[in-house]
Length: 102
Image (cartoon, rainbow, N blue to C red; front, side):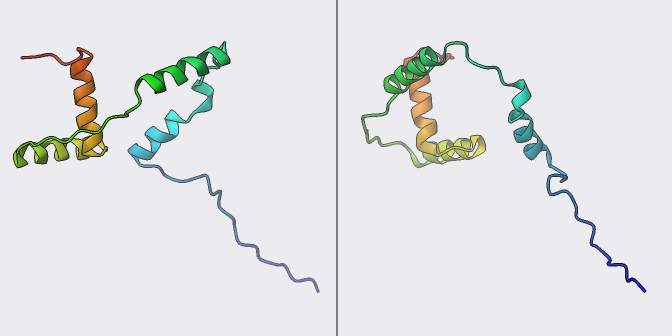
């Protein structure tokens, strides 16, 4: 008499329910939507030049009100970045003329 061996059903580890944020990341990583760069060497050179031009090589110290600093920290948290990065980004946009003055 032969005995049947019961095997556990193995679920697919990739078959999971994603929340909206996780799905957004998954969609962004969809390689079918990516396009190849025609001249890779030129693109690499362009990106290296951009990295050099945007290198942060100077440090500054400033005094601002506690209220302003708290507002910057809250805005940075909302954007998901360190507040120092947000401040540097705001300053860069201002210097580059991308900030609209009211």
